[in-house]
Length: 322
Ligand SMILES: Nc1ncnc2c1ncn2[C@@H]1O[C@H](COP(=O)(O)OP(=O)(O)OP(=O)(O)O)[C@@H](O)[C@H]1O
Ligand SMILES: [Mg+2]
Ligand SMILES: [Zn+2]
Image (cartoon, rainbow, N blue to C red):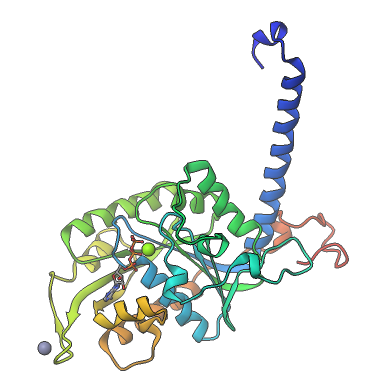
């Protein structure tokens, strides 16, 4: 409080402001605990990001999440592209949070998209999906923190997070809120996209986020007539960039018109099991992601993460759901 307080007419208002600030601090501290509790139950967190828009992040996120769920893993898919959420459309999910059955606790249910797949997106929370989203930084940060703290994700093997392009509030919030998140960087073969991918890699180095690997999407076009791959842009740049930065190259996924129709129809094509070079390439990416994850250490126990209210003596099952 400044020195002008002594002469200020609204001393009562000032006291109110400070108790509001205290309440806000208490809320943030509670939320921090809720975030730790939620994250401690999730083994692997993957942030799908890119420097440039439209390179296929949402396509990769959706297909990766569905592919992992098909392989028997428990998977969450979190859409943090708050201005342009696409995940519900890509999975044909029309659920509304307001209609969802709530459990006994205070946690909100994500969409149960299939037996092993839970999804959340701002679209699910909105009353009218056509409303424009005009949030600025602090609100976006809060929304993402609530996606983690207030959602009942339960035990997950993987949480896949679909980010908007660039290195703005959304990936920064993920980096600061989920310290063990790993980045899966998506690029396309053009030079301009590869210049942008270097920015994503530098971002990860800056915020000390481990890079799971790089996917080169739209790498060649599958000819609808003969099924062969036509090199539209030169391909292979992603692999070279990965080698330059000494990060894993997870594979090239060719451009296939069926990916677009699948995405628009809410039926992810890359996980369709069809016999096509794009499906085969994407399955290899998923296998590599699983292989990489197996090499990473398991998350630390909840009590050690400081997320459990039971203290050092271990968990009291009457008080604690961990
Ligand atoms: N391998 C592919 N073959 C053909 N089309 C593809 C492929 N990958 C993505 N697409 C299409 O490209 C378009 C952009 O993809 P997507 O929305 O996944 O990109 P994005 O990086 O998430 O975009 P944004 O930056 O706007 O969030 C979509 O219409 C999608 O169906
Ligand atoms: Mg997207
Ligand atoms: Zn052809």
